[in-house]
Image (cartoon, rainbow, N blue to C red; front, side, top):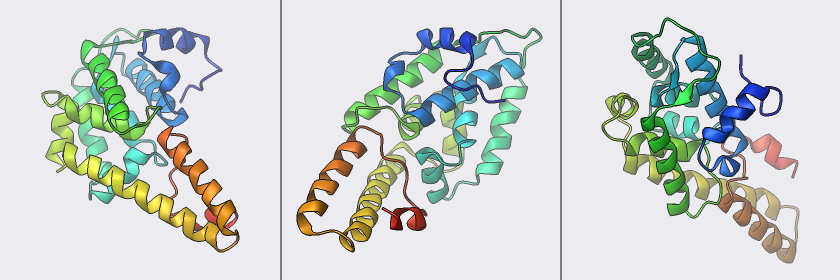
Length: 211
């Protein structure tokens, strides 16, 4: 079960332990809530980076998942490997509120640093992926690198995907708007992208066409 942002008061209290929680995008929040839920179901007292990675690759509409697919990662195989890794550390006692390990806190701080480096006000799933990779000695990073995922490649794909998304939107909007309106709309989209509020648009031509 995936907890929602407002429905579970226990998880609402847990958010106080997350650094800069107000800066996470809705998808990133879902990832972290799912990571916490995974830890609970696996009877782990702590949310580890591997829980975050597993929750990340189980978000099919996230930017991080799209990037991994573009890098040729077999997500199902990666998911099974992460699950095997976590099953080896399954605890005996369930806990209502798993807490972040120091490694997980470090990953989240690194994700925030990556968002800042990319000029983004909000922390999205792509930044979480970069944070996991920057923690080079962690198990999650090792599993990703085993599948050929490198930090530099992910950053490059982020730039590529954002450029393609903006080009797609401009192309569709140009068909129906005059130049002043297009320029204003483009500026609005650029601002949304910088704030991490622009949803992924790869493969959403039909939806874009309605704009």
